Length: 504
Image 1 (cartoon, helix red, strand yellow):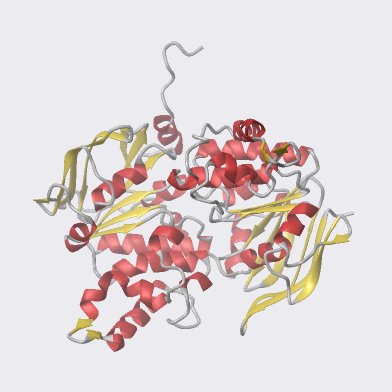
Image 2 (tube, rainbow, N blue to C red):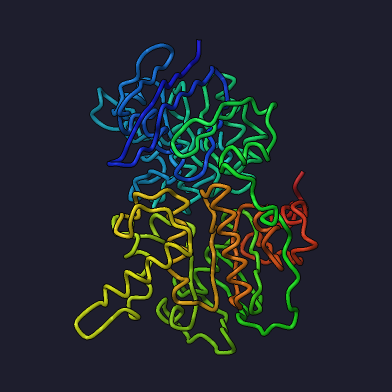
């Protein structure tokens, strides 16, 4: 008997049908992948199975017993636990409290919490994941990848029968990803079924037993991994073959282009140390390395979000003033696409139009307020140019799929025509079709003369897009290589901390 069965699921949001007659089965100990473009219905199906919302039609059973639809806590108690794409944590609580939230062990009949037991349990599950996090630190102060590991740890601590993972490795390093895979294998050996959503197809073919594909809210099919080719899976997802150029290495470019950005001696105690590099006009400079190596912090310092202890930043031959702020960076032609789009890149309750035009409000200002007509026209042009799928410009950003949200985060800067783009994980959680579009946009921006600093944990992305690649290790530049000569093996070797001479 199948462990979990979802039968003939239908669900709509207003007049938009998100799922139509979708069925899915997971066997005990099976790693079952769920694939499809952003907006295909994957997140909706996960929400229904995990009890976030009930379906309009259909049912879900676990070991033959109906699950209580639309009741998250009851579904978790039944044995179905989900880790969603955006980490669901309480930022003001520490990692221990987040791991045990809702099921804290007590002493003397629950008069107070057994904090020793909680700390021990949290350390154990983090050790299982190969992580050494500051457990007493508020989770809101941790990196996105660390917050994701806390969410995963909470799920692993549950005695679950089905574990749902939605893009769990999107912000994890290769080392963290392999630690997670080892933990999942242990769960499989205990008969736990895994429903796994990922746009990283190499993970699907490496780890999954079967794959189910959704497109436009409908079932395309379920296949064993051994019976399907990568190209066939992609075509099932997008309904068309992808442009072969999306996998091409960087194109030749003008070597004597003027230097647009120069960073010298950039240092911040305990984060990064003596960072030196330049980016030419029209160049894509990849910044690779493990999570926590300092990549994001360097981008934030260049944009004026974080302070630096020493160093200088020169843009278009003009030094940035000491203690410059974000508005100075924007006025000088910088743009930042942050890795955490939902908390740092978007105002989710606001409309697509508001988000797209937010950095450019001065351009639409007039004596008595905003020129809403010209702002609306600009937003509609950006929606068309970026290929954003939305019912209307006034739709809230939070109603869009992750891929379309990411297009907004990138598109809101395009109107300003920046000279320097700082792109931090620009395709995190984006499906293969949308990733192809974003890659094309990045190349177009570079060809137009913009300089691009590309931070990515996606090794193929770094290799495909970068003209040059810098590798960070523990806050220092460990190596540099041209994009045409780079290999994944070399980048990983530089990214890993060197062994200590006394290590045995």
